[in-house]
Image 1 (spheres, rainbow, N blue to C red):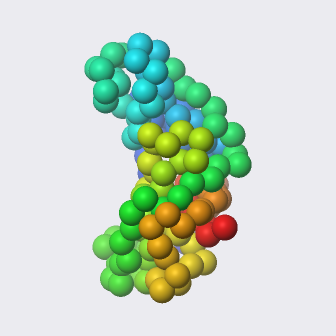
Image 2 (image 1 turned 90 degrees about the horizontal axis):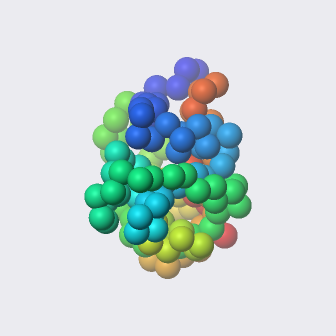
Length: 138
């Protein structure tokens, strides 16, 4: 069956992030002026407004902890009807605590999810061109 889920689009601000994700590697935008990370990536630093930005490789062994979450019992977009209930989490990265990424926690029941729960990033292939970060409990 063909994927019905929306595929994140690359643009001039997020292209390095998605190119890294497609290779199953996390790459984060960082401000060269104030050294703050910006996620989601944008045309300027969210902290100081500088346009002097670079990209920093974090690798592919990414760990974090659940910062917040919701449990969805109905699909908000096409393609998610078979994934219910869906745990959508904000995950604080272990090595870059100021960065929080949103993703689904897979293979976890709603009864088992908890704030502070350790998780590991995995990469889920959406199609031949795009992979997205997801999480599994550790």
